[in-house]
Image 1: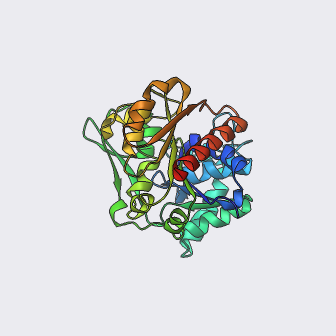
Image 2: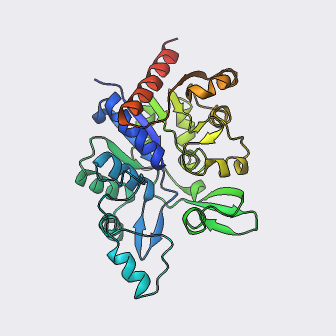
Image 3: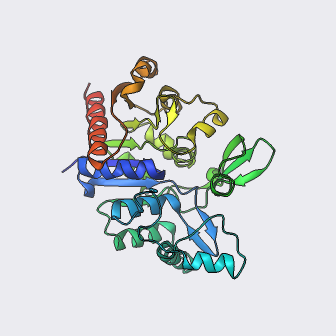
Length: 315
């Protein structure tokens, strides 16, 4: 029997890392728990950006240049909605992408759960691992701007291009949500839980906000990969959100956010000077090249993380 691994994931960085993780472990022994607080309803359709980015990337259908959306995409429906019907065009859905959202919305409309819709989509893409949403309940990331507005995450990130300064990030609905079926059991039974190099505030943060998840992680072996390299984000907007969440923009500061349950932390080589600060948290740390230019590099990062965690657990 292989190593049972659970990955907490959200965003493009996570999807690229997972492309390496499935090379480092037996995919059948992997469960991926994805953030769904970025979900949005558009034109009556339930859109799950993080679930879809993971599905398209690992299923071989992602637009590799942008890291999200479908390859060979067309925009006939989006163009017709905007030009003929005057519908808002700030969040564009491609024609191939719409098929995924139609299926998900149909399952939900017929009384199914997000877990069931995700399983149906994952099967169609022949994903070799189990993909779970963090919850079947609605949890929504809200961005409170410095000028006092309360925006949905996609409205802030896509609609306003992350322009407004952020005063607060909150997860509406999280306090009353329950983990999706299988999430807590997978974590409790895992030989390794991996925190993907995802945005710690709005990708990993919502998963941890679902009651029961963090408490279960405290009894599991956990390793994470820093999404911050040399004091900067590799991509995304974590540098805009970490200060609003009370953290510095550094690899050590992100480790500190997870210190209550984190056993091991992988930093980029350029952050070797932060290893001591991480280890003062009681977390073992190691450095490597974490810029995942290829699936082979991502696989090497995954093996480094799992080897470090195995060493920590055995000592």
